[in-house]
Image (cartoon, rainbow, N blue to C red; front, side, top):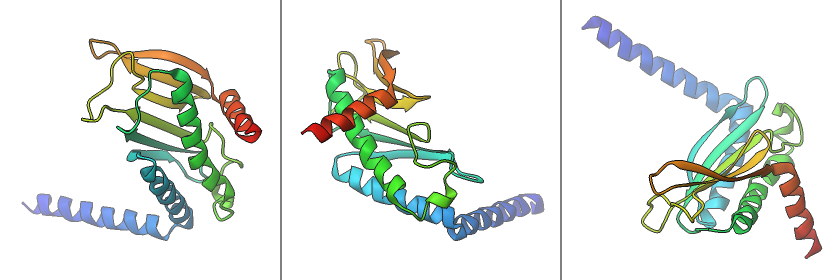
Length: 177
């Protein structure tokens, strides 16, 4: 019985001390502020935050966030690509424009090597999408990947492309308008 209470007490102390460290660490405070602002912006666009992650010690090497939405459904790679690039830009710009975060970045500016975004699409009832619909779009190791599920629920990669090239074309097309 004493071991059980000691274990619970130790866990609570560990939890409190780890939260206190995170709250007092300027790197974490600034990162959390930017991530919360980004999530608010994306929420207005119909996206819900599903998860966060990254590698931030001793410097921020990468940030990872996963979003889901039932506001958009695509069968076209081109349409899904445009949406992804727009969302990625909304996410990237605040990190690269906030000067307070720069001392904590492993490299500046942050690029697709440092920011990993994933978007999962659902139908209006929040069910998985299957072919011909695109179920997810995400960056991984410099690639933009489009996936869906077949009629058996198995993931199928529909298309892969180098993200830096795609993103630079997106930014150029925005400037041309």
